[in-house]
Image (cartoon, rainbow, N blue to C red; front, top):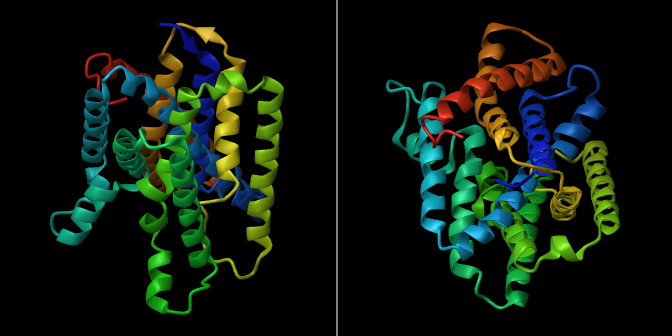
Length: 315
């Protein structure tokens, strides 16, 4: 199998960034640096993941393999929800509402798989719309998510009920307002062959611009005393995600091994187990905790890959 290894390397970096978000990287060293990474640069990881998956989903759609793709993601979700059940399921102290909400939304980082499934299903039904309507859909859904996030974090709406709703994470970070815009963008990049039409110099410029916009946006949020909360839906991500993805597509280092991609998946899915376990057993500083979790996740991924050779739906 001919693969773009540079894209697999990017996925490993993105998975490590997700670890940094969950472990509050640099929080013990610098408050500014922590905010600019955890609520800034690192927040590009999941949108880029969605863009990558949307790009390759186009081929799946063209080849008529969408059902098998959806089934595989669903099995992946079921496996990891069962794996993490010891952290979220308590027979003696769990309400039906919490149980149902957790199943539908996904436990912690597993919301990504729910977003992936929802976005893919919408793309299957909506991709035949005129291109202008698709672009409008991407813009409207993305801006809606950003607007809800900012209205909530800055408590702009006076009504306490609406304010509480806007500050509920799944309201803005979901398959419609978060996953769909990036997944559909990746789908269109492949369909319109934008990764071939955009030069590497242009992709470098766009990626650099996007990163600077992301840092600038997160810094404004950091210094603003009215801000109250973390950020997922940042407006600069709509530039960063496709630009970085196209850049790594243009680098295009060829290879045949899928192992790096499997390590990226392994780090993403297993890291929370090590993070929660270490928080329970130790009192490590945030930065050391981040690095330790990454190292343990790499080791854990080695064994997950071995198991995945026998059971194909865990990575």
